[in-house]
Each structure stands twice: as C-alpha cells, then as structure tokens.
Length: 310
Image 1 (cartoon, rainbow, N blue to C red):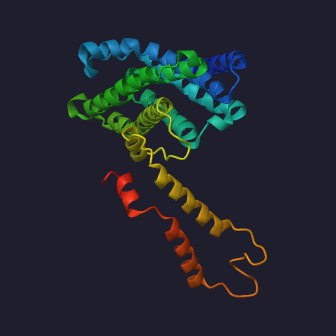
Image 2 (tube, rainbow, N blue to C red):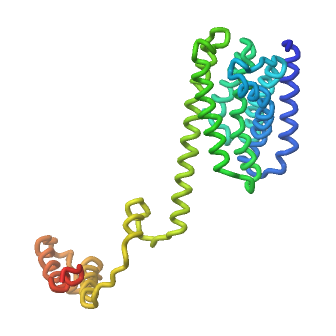
Image 3 (cartoon, helix red, strand yellow):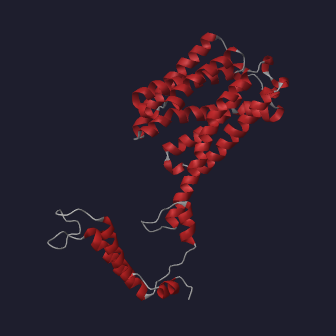
C-alpha cells in the first residue's frame, strides 16, 4: 500500500471513529461507558480482520502467515486511528477514564509499534496478534450492555489470547529459524508488552477471588461485631452456640456492672473516686477495684462446669 493510501486510511478511520462516538455517546450515561465506545468498536473490528491471518497460522504456523500487505497495513493504520481518537476524544469527554499507564503510555507506545511494523514489513505479524483484541471486545460489550457481561468468558478469552497465544508467539519469533528478516525485534516487542498483559490478568484473578469472598459472606452472614477475616470465618463456621449456666451468667453480669460503676460512676459529694481535693492514689484505687471484682467472680466449680471439665 502506497504511503498516500495509508494516510487516507488513517484519516478516514479517524473521522469515522469520531462520528461513531458522537452518534453513540448520548445513549450511554456514565463516563466509563462513554470511554468504552471507541474501544469496543475498534477491538471488534480488529478481531474480525485478524481471522484470515489466524487461519494461516493454524494451517502453517508463523511461517505460513501470508503478508496480505494491503489488508495488514490498513489494519495497522485503523488501529493507529483508534489510539489517536481515543486520546483526543477522551481528553475532551472522559478524561477521568484515561490513566497515565493504560491510557497515554499504552496508546503512544502502540502507535509507535504499528508504525515500526509497517515500515519493516511486519504488518502481518501485528494483524495476527490482533486476535488479542477479542477479550477487549468482550469486556467492552459487557460494559456498554451490563446484561451481556460475562466475567468468565472474558477471563477465558484473556488467558487464551493475551497469555497463552502471546507466549507462544513470543518464543516462536525468538527462535532464529522464525525471525522475520533475521530480526529479533518482533520478539522483543512482544516481550515488552507481556508484563502489562500479565498485570491485567492478575487484576482479573484478584477480582474473581474478591467477588467469591463477597458471595460467601452473603450466603453466611455473621454478626456485626465479628471480624470477617478467613480465620474468624473458619472458626464461626465450625463453632456451635454454648449457653452458659445461669449462675455463671449472673456473676458475669454483676462483674460487668461493678466494672462499669468504677469506670463510669457519676461524680458527687462523697462518691467521687478521683477527688479534686486530694491526689489520685493508683494503688489504693486498684486494691479497692480488685476487692470488688473478686467478690463477684464465679466460683472455681462454676467455671470448671462451664468449660466442661466437671
């Protein structure tokens, strides 16, 4: 494809994406949904366009993938147009959804990757790897239309394409026998992108675990004063309620009342335990409190019976 034709494809795709956003955005109310309009359209387009290259790969491996120069270059230009449109439109309409790493750094880096692929005759490699946009399309559909959301389908597609396929292509293009034009650059590019995919998949797995814990808590609700950590959940799941004997309960109530009296007693004539006319005597205070507490403690026999040793 000539440079003038490639430029016209880039400009046409850029205009088309902006029009799609202008027409579609009124139907989606939240900034998050608005941010996924262009991503969903672009990822779906790239996934469909990658099918011929994926078919070649399934038949003859990486060496059997045909160049299809015109189609491959057009795919790269359309993806560049999406990256530019997402940053431009997003800066005006949903800037809160564009982060530094997954927004600016990611998009600028991929514009450079596409340009490198076009200039070095590796556009068909990028077209083959465009199948990795399938999980983005699934996630975008689920974001725009929540009733169609499927976390399991997204996780399966992500693991299959952006983890497994990515690693296979990485190691294949790293082998000297499969390096295009004896260049190790495609393998290096794949290696540099993989950590980002691994980070996203780690976040996906953590989300699954968090939602599983939330569902478990909803099925087995605990009292409000119980810590909902894993150790407490295991303990309360296997513990049966024990009703203490009446005499132990009565003595414990008296103990709590006596301690509450010492801590929260109202100040008054002849009843203040910390008088303003004399200094506080901690030892005497502790002795009086201990004598009062010992008087209401349950007897050893009652305690032994309560814990089941009698």
